[in-house]
Image 1 (tube, rainbow, N blue to C red):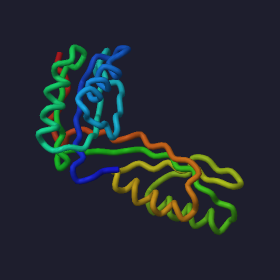
Image 2: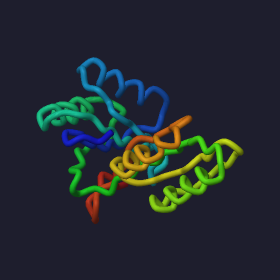
Image 3: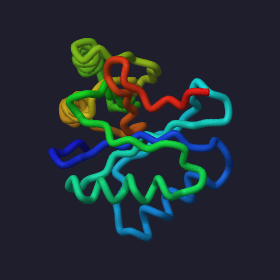
Length: 170
């Protein structure tokens, strides 16, 4: 998922209906492709945080930030430099395990990647794994030998390292 030209933008927005659609429409109108977007509550009531990943050069990202800042429901937007963020993604992966040896081998892989088995059936395991997109990709490549039956990824969520923040002060 993550490539060398993948960029991360964080935005604080009003937490109300239609904001996500408005932002998605802005991306569509400008011809920007969103690779992933996560949205959730912030520490301040009434505001949400969006983490958006997209591909593009610095000029494209600068344009996206400018366009987002023009939207009424967007409070603050920042480009997050990859080397200065803590970023994670969650994946749920259902894999085939038709016998006890396969199940045991798959569980060993899960432990190496510090994942968790969250559901077990006679013919499958559902695994939860959290980490960087590269870690998730590596895990998925390994699970392909067992047969991935189903996959759900959250997309990247990120915060700046250290004291730097896009938090809105009261």
